[in-house]
Length: 344
Image (cartoon, rainbow, N blue to C red):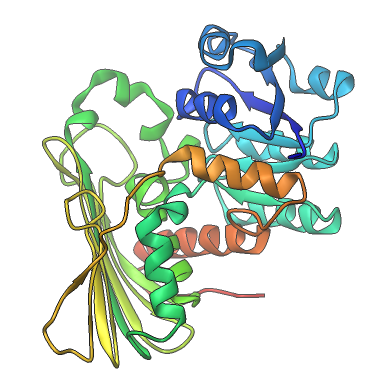
């Protein structure tokens, strides 16, 4: 029989993706019950509707929650400037943590949390859910088994809609303020693709450079566009073009070239993954199901890890690695100088 655990959801009126998280917790058999902390009480109705009988109790303060129950996993989703305090509280109480990104405003905020997690043998994982997509898992296996050979280079694109930025409500939200969000497109969406590139190649980014801009002219002090170039520890190079450019929807691409072939992923189109071997021009296509994907498989991974059944979605060090990468890029864009990223 599967071991069941209790999960605390620590959030407030600024919590992101809560409906997806509540749905996931409802669907996952290993989740016995859920405790909600929400000072605003604005998320209670949604939690009741989506969690049903799994919602055990609601608290206004996280401190009160932990005084009364001892959950195994804390799911933290709130704006970046608020998240570190809640993560620290959960770790202090012996909870594994699954946190909505970026979960901090700087590396010095996040690094002590990783150190605390490691000292207590706990997982601190950022919610970079795309790792669990079937085509990503398949592509990772292709690369690991050497099908495309030694990696030569990486090219990525990730574009979302500019339309959301024109909404007056967005101008007032935490996403539009650097002192609340840490950054703009890159720390909210681009972070996924940068993490995937390191996850797929089993190789950290060690040096970054690039530029940011507000190309859409909206009243916000975070970037809506970012262009990056970077070096991986194995010596190959990569690029990312990212921004809120579209009227609606997404465009995306991840392409990885190797000595024996290349692969290309277009996650939001009908060709989720194609690859060639020996550069012979013949394309092989991923023809398996692209489901399940989204937040449910990622939350399931976190729950199972907290139950002692498998690895977390990201290790604490991998979470720190992507935070270092994101904020090193912001330093590079601000200074006009490439930045080296520590891997210790």
